Image (cartoon, rainbow, N blue to C red; front, side, top):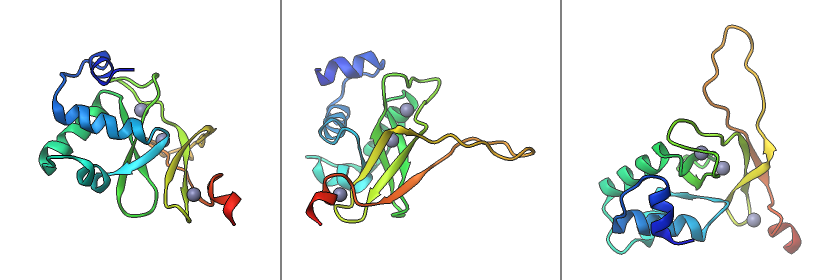
Length: 138
Ligand SMILES: [Zn+2]
Ligand SMILES: [Zn+2]
Ligand SMILES: [Zn+2]
């Protein structure tokens, strides 16, 4: 699908930064990418604009935050169900110790409930090990 079409679907004005950022996410679909990765792959990287773009994408249900224990915040593309009101990214993430990729495991649902008296806002489940690509090379 065309980058412009996707941005319009999410009610986002088309700008060159937004197009570049979305393109980078599409190239790594199903995987999380860091701020640093985006910055180093953009022609004209301006930290502030990039930061705002990520925030806007997140607010519009286009990407979600991924915490993979690396200390760096990463982001990955959402599924169609996410929108500007609510995110539905309650899946586990898998960090591969070999290729260092962080993968969205859509088929593994992170369903846990907090004990009574607690108010849960987010659940992050992180699995670590070897991904299905790396397992074949060991
Ligand atoms: Zn989402
Ligand atoms: Zn791997
Ligand atoms: Zn994810």
